[in-house]
Image 1 (tube, one colour):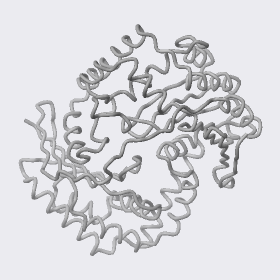
Image 2 (tube, helix red, strand yellow):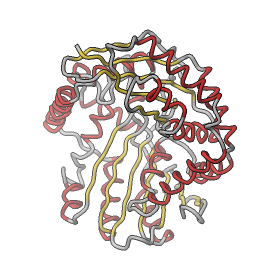
Image 3 (spheres, helix red, strand yellow):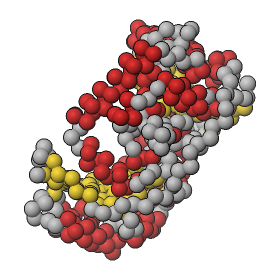
Image 4 (cartoon, helix red, strand yellow):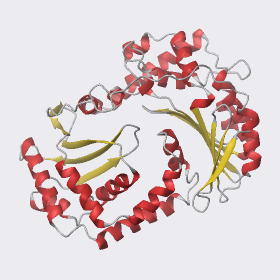
Amino acid sequence: MGSYQTLFANFYNAQTLILDNGFKFVFVKNPRVEQSAHYSLIYNVGARDENATLHKTGLAHFLEHLMFHGTTLYPPNIYETIIYKAGGEQNAETEHDYTKYYATIPKENLIEILEIEADRMQNLLIEADAFEKEKSVVLEEICGADEADLLEPYRQGVRDRLYNGHPYQRPIGGIRPNIENLTIDDAYDFYRKYYQPCNATLYIEANLDFDDISQHVNIIFAPLQNNTPIIRQVINLNPPINRKLHIHRSENQENAHFNRTYRLPISNLRDKAALELLCSFLNFKSCSFNQFLIDQKKITNDLGISFNSNQKDFWIIEISFIFDHKNFELNQLNEIIDQAFTKTLESEDINEAKLSEIRKAAEYNNMCIMTVFPSYNHLFTQTIALGQPIENLESSLIIEKELAYTDIKNSLKTLINNKEYLTSCLLTQ
């Protein structure tokens, strides 16, 4: 059957199984739900794996659509039909780093759905008519998204400068000329290369017995064969940031937006926890950072500091706010932000009492996550999708409790010394 182990059972009660063909299975027993089961099948492939040199962008997302067109054994739409008739729900998503298919369904339908997943992993049937029909659907999605999201040109400008040659620069859905020229052979080549058991992980959360469900997983997925070894493109993990000020004007924009974006290299769990707590601290209304920018300098009425660790290659910290561009020069805003950072570092704001307050808020958030079904889904699937050990989930909680306020201050010092950030502004006409 392969090997399996129990991981941090006291907290998340997670167990894993690795089959001989490399297929991975992660199971979380959730006794709070009796009738439902949630599963996610995650493939370690996304828009980053497309060959942009050969103009194949958009292929990962296009293939996600094609995966619902059936096999010889299972006709098109049978997957959705079974789930919806049972009162369940399903969806799929393509990101730069992964592709995920997921559903919440009655437990009695789980095995049948997994059998369909296994079959379409190796026996996808792409008919010419279905291919052209789905291509039209994807092109309409892109056109509709562009028309509905008036800020997309602004965001694309940010990606162009921030990632500058890295696959994250490209839109996940691709661009119209590339998609129009994709062929069935392109889809099959991409499918056969990346849709292999060694490149997939199944996550299930349900009130089931691990030994029983793992036997079913073994019966369904162990017979699947891998194709050829997966050789991935070499990606530059340190592309230069184009720091030239990015300004985008829009006649449909009522307010001016300012963004300062830091692109940070992936580091260790301790640094990640410190940065998460730092951003939580900077968002406090009573923090010197907020008070200086809002109350003293009056550059905005509200601001946000976000930390994004949901990428394989970079961490992102972003400071964003709405401002009156008639009263402030753009260079002046950066100077004021630097002053706010310095004042925060010099203040006594970052202390053990404030850190304790932030920890309590984080613990409450974790408690809320654990009482909602599917309670662990996002935690586990995101960790799996980014190729991280699932042990990191508990390790992060332990590290978070061990951090001292001096660790948070050191993270702030590092951010202050980092001048490799991007400044971007969305202005009214």
